[in-house]
Length: 251
Image 1: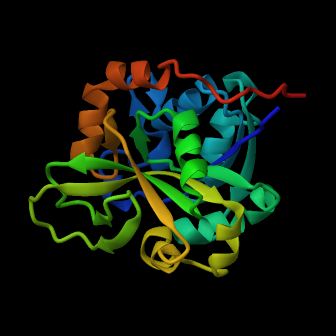
Image 2: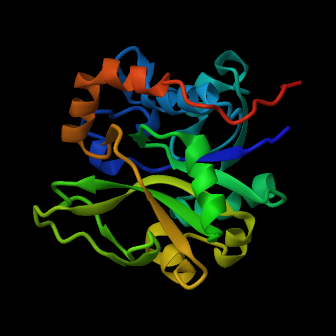
């Protein structure tokens, strides 16, 4: 039976959100009656992805206290703890021992939620035979985000840094499928997936799967308040049924 792991990047400092959530790691910010991170765990579990690796850092002991080994959330959680900020790429590299034998695995940003069919995303990845698949969404206001340049066949051709201008475009939604070979392309030490690793992978093949579902990034207070206002919608989206990836029997 197939077993796909998911790495959740939840170690960010959350500096911009500190005014709204001063004493918690960003991923534990409350949305409705749940920590934001619980929505992601719930979404993964619902779709049959139950082997999780959480990359923690700033106030990470609070995340471990809430989720522990994952049993209460119908998942199994291993933790990769960074002692100093490593960035998204560095955090994934630090967790390499948990996924180095995997042919492929999911990676999710712990401070954003995307309504996505993980099984369909995995199928897309396999059909395109690239090294990485990136979930992307159309966005009317890309001032907070860099944009993604795509070819007609969905291959990523390049990235454009955020400009601060209110223009439309395609943005990276922070959900990926990586082939195991990607790990060797990430250097040790602090590094960014978005700025340092993805540009190196373009020649290897990154493909973009465009999504149309709900997306929210709680990185700034305004968007965190938006997430709180749509908590019921996010909770429903996290429980949406898709044809799930075959579930493993946990010990």
